[in-house]
Amino acid sequence: MLFRRTLTLVAGLGLAAIVAGCGDDAPTEPTPPPVPTNLAVAQLSLTSVRVSWTASTGADRYILERASATQPGVFTAVGGSITGTSFDDTGLTAGTAYSYRVAAATGTAVSTYATPVSITTGLKAATVQGNITANRTFYKDTVYTLKGFIKVTTGATLTIQPGTKIVGDLATPGSSLWILRGAKIDAQGTAAEPIVFTSANAPGNRKPGDWGGIIIIGNGIINRTGTPINTEGGAAGVAENYAGGTDNADNSGVLRYVRIEFAGYDISNGAGQELNALSMYAVGSGTRIEYIQTMSGLDDSFEWWGGAVDTRYLVSYESGDDHFDWTEGYQGCNQFLIALQTQRLVPASGAGTFSSDPRGFEADGCDPVANSGCTVTTTNASTPYSRPVFANFTLVGPGQLGGFPADGNGIVLRRATAGILTNGIVARWPGVGFQVRDAFTDSLRLRDSLTVANVVLAENGPLATPTHYDADGLDTTPAAESSRRFGQAAKYAGKNHRTGTQAAALFTSLNPAGLDWTPKTTAGQPDPTTGGGTVVPTTLNARVAGYPYTGGWASTTYVGAAAPTGAKWWDGWTVYLIN
Image 1 (cartoon, rainbow, N blue to C red):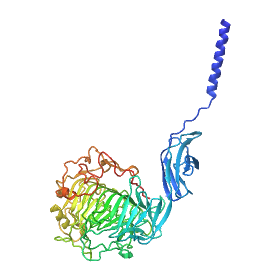
Image 2 (image 1 turned 180 degrees about the horizontal axis):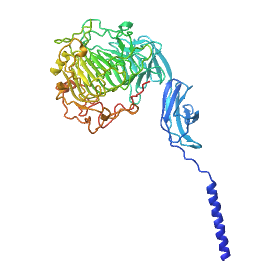
Image 3 (image 1 turned 135 degrees about the vertical axis):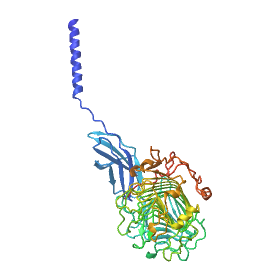
Image 4 (image 1 turned 180 degrees about the vertical axis):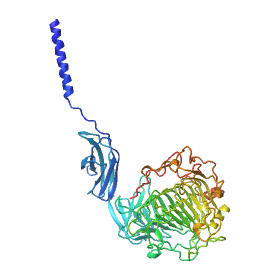
């Protein structure tokens, strides 16, 4: 019995040794890297797309596969062994739906594939040339090229479907879209499918001034006298008369969820006549303009000449001149506006040059240059005054950026403008936060026709001058306008202005790679999430009583363009792409 048990024990030990030996000799399978995230597909042209994703930790290459609508679910590898995180897939068929998926690999280990992402390449390409004299629709299955100055004439309506892309002809400088008096535009995109006006160049090669922009001319009232009074563009023979309007309730149509990128053009070869991203001449309050973004423009982003159109949810990133500019008796009400300037971009060759005095807000009553039909003196000014309402605005400048003009101020009020500016943030402007530039404009402040209230100012002025106002004390009337400064801090006492030293401390993120305008509380800085003793301007409620948008005018206690909680209204349909 002992001998048998010994043999059994020896046999058991031998088997264990054999099993252990097999385990030691077996290869260990490598662990696959994580599945790539943020898979995205963007169209480069009618027959090419760019597929991109976020790198996976430990991956040494990626496997990209494509399926088409003709064989859905049948994926075939494209691009070979890809070591980067993007691939340009060319030679596709126009008007075809494609799906892409990607996996990460290291050695022989391969992750599972990311959830497929689909795109449909453009179906058709159409060139638009000459005036649009009858009703016409632009469809989202077509990329439209504007060749020259395209004018929608009286009685015609241009309808643009959600998701439509419109570009300017690169060989025809200043190619642009004009909605003339008596015509209409019906461009109603959605957050998921914004309408995009942009450069015809491929991403990475786009510049400010690649095309002209959008010009709308209504039948509203302006304060200039004489006829004709032409839009900018006379030197090129394309100007339009906007004088004599009598209807501030005029309707020029709808712009909703629209992006306007890489626009602007010096139409006068240096004589001060430029096309902006969106120019609004005498546009009436029957027009609806909301959820509009401009990006990388050559001149102003948004400019109003008279009229009374109301707007909301406007975004301006990287303007060549002013982000928001009004003049000639503009009367509209505007709420929730964002401006961001971080740099000076390089304009397209031959498109023009950037301004010497870019600002967040540039506000005029009327510009009294020779033969302008404007009057601005110490005792009289053209009427009706410019008297808009701008509320819940966020204006962020470039700081002490080398090469940026010293006159780059957050807000400049001049030439007899009235109005109400309230609940704003003005930060990081190299000049000053805000200033009132002349005696007549200052007299409107004294008469409560010009009110600036509830503004947080931070990091404005050379070396972040603590007052953030212009305070040179010159209340006389010297000869040079540039030395007349009426925007002293003491004159705005009691208007609930607060100052800080850190612009970035006011927001969730000022990083262009992930902008989040939600205000936040930071110790030692003004709190933009609370009113801090909000001042309600005397005439504000009466002015905004007829605000025409869903939900009406929002009464807020926070300052800036974003609420401390709730939906981020700019999310999903805006972009930050400088080229």
